[in-house]
Amino acid sequence: MKLGLCENILKEAYNIAQNETLIIFKTEIKIKGILIPLIEYEIFSPITKEKLNLNYCKDKNLYIDIIIIIIFYISL
Image (cartoon, rainbow, N blue to C red):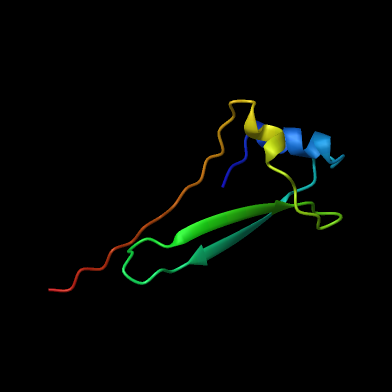
C-alpha cells in the first residue's frame, strides 16, 4: 500500500516527522461463497498509536495505491 501525497498530508496534520513510518493495519475477511476476501486498511501514528483520519486526504483528489496479489489454484 502506497499512500503517496496523502502520507505527507497526514504527517503534517498529526505533526509526525517526515522520516517516521506510518503504521498500516490490514484486515482480511473471508466470506463464504466469495473468492476474494474483503480487505480493510487503517492507518496509525507510529508515536501515539492513534488512528489517523483519512478524510484529510478526501477532497484533495489524491490516489492511494493498493497492490493486491491474487493466486488461483486450479486442480484438474
